[in-house]
Length: 87
Image (cartoon, rainbow, N blue to C red; front, top):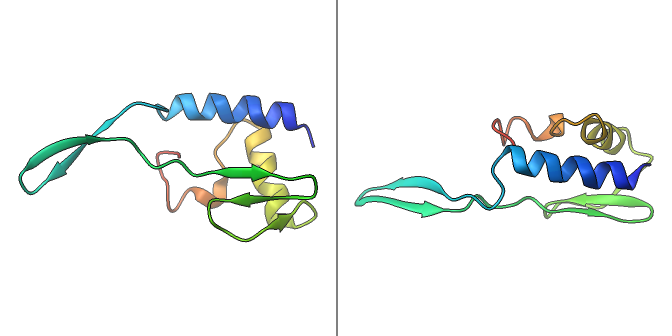
């Protein structure tokens, strides 16, 4: 696993979705600025944790697909239903 490539691509993906940029959120009384909630990805020697999810070993096919998507420069396909614009 190329951790340097993963970290580089995560930085690129974060900039694509506007990391640190506030978005307008409409409220019943008007609107306010809010920052999107980040989704943490924790890399361990033997696996990963996405968000508040369970530990996933690198040997698991879903983990391999997630990391391959990131190494290819894409948002993980497993996150697409929840985050259609990226996270």
